View (cartoon, each protein chain N blue to C red):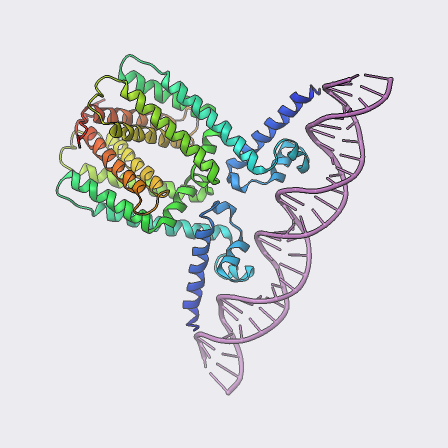
Length: 208
Length: 208
DNA sequence: AGTTTGGGAGTACGGATGTACACCGAACTT
DNA sequence: AAGTTCGGTGTACATCCGTACTCCCAAACT
């Protein structure tokens, strides 16, 4: 049943990443021991070093992986076109719900480590979110009717919207797929986006 | 220098709580060892049991304490009166900045344990935030001009506002008191509140 | 076919952890 | 003044931790 060596190594590496993700689901990255992970994977503790020089490096690989799926979400959100604003809002929330459900483990990891993780992890996550805010700001700037907005107000609006989406994602993490609670949260997210849209349409930047 | 026994006991208990708060500032509650805390306090490990039956109970005491200061913040925010909306917004943000600066350790603890902590801790924090949302909703409902709002829309708006404030608090935690970054975040928070206010004023609840 | 490579196994060690136990001495009670 | 209470001490032990070391053997290379 054994394959080539690189395939086998990659499979073990994945198993380690998955085991670490599963184990950190209850507790946290910082409370993760090399021996726990090894036992979960089914290898002897010292074999761990064939793949990662330390638990910390495992953590960094996990962050990178999770941020990859976050970036994939952002890409998909930007490509969610639509005729009018309502369609875009509905589509965006649908994408968010679907993605959080699919990559539940990754988003849970991000939520947990965002403030509780080691400094390097926290910074990486913060930069990922800031990137989303900046990209959203430039996207909005390309929309018609935003010429009277100051750059600063655009940035602040983006932070508000991204913050709402992040909070929505965090709420979704605690619900069952297809549950009434999930639908209620999605509905609230749509309403919030509409409220912010109404606010934006009636906003006049102060020329200071 | 020794006082009465109850005074001495209370002082040691406080020292344990403070040490745990300080130690969990880097890392997390789950990665906190009884011996670390005891060493930080300056007592022998077994003496810890004179005050708490386990580290977990220490954690619960810490949560309760932190939620107490959170409730104090909410109380103060509700008493922040003002002539017009702009004054209320400015006052509320000022209170938030001041309180987060004052009880930095408690709010940092809440931010860290909100998603990474043990289940009991996470639930307690979630309930504290939900309480704030409900109270804000009933406060808004008592304002003039909100008679056309559905109860659900009021709740959703409150969640949006509280979410923005929570995000602001989390951002403030990473800044130095009086720094330009802190002022920038406070300014963004004020702008966000104004944007949501504009949205709310032009909002019409759908009668479904 | 013979040799090299590298993932995994096994053993071993020092250090940290939670906790049980007996004990001390000063603040309290009577 | 004598006795009790109880926060803190010191010792002890089983368990878990990271990691260094040697060995094994099947895939990969020559």
